[in-house]
Length: 189
Image (cartoon, rainbow, N blue to C red; front, side, top):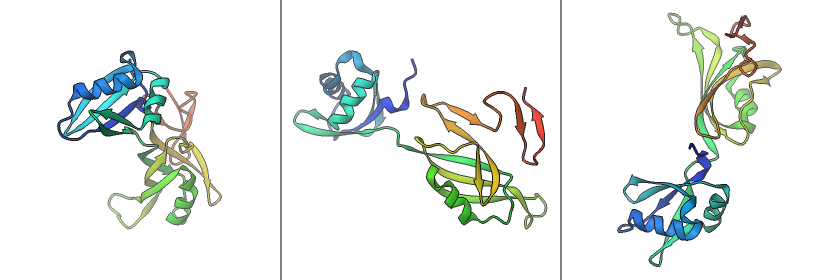
């Protein structure tokens, strides 16, 4: 059974706290049938996996575990943002990086932008831009967007709810025609 990434928490214990103590405190909070897994991450950190949404809610509300009078803080194992590599197609080279940053701001923070260059002519730019984006998981980047009046498309690996990656390409949902970087089309197989 694959659980959503939101069902996992990090328990940051102090020295001397055992895995059995973490299990006992978690069992007291949510019940033994709601515990999916406990993974020792080394040091004094443990990854706790919970089976149901109600157990996750109880764990979030508690915010910590009580073990022998000591408070062990608990935090979600995944954040609301994920670092993603994005390829931006069909954007003219005269459109500046500042305009890209502004257009992508609702979807996350742009960490880095690189323009594609011709292999043997490194001073010549081509159309694609390679973007490092800290994307918000609750508002993912769409397939198409207008930047400075130009319709651009994006390719990236999207994190799904279950933690697996899924390719995002124009036309990939319906298996239809896919638009390439030069505007040419090819039938998806």
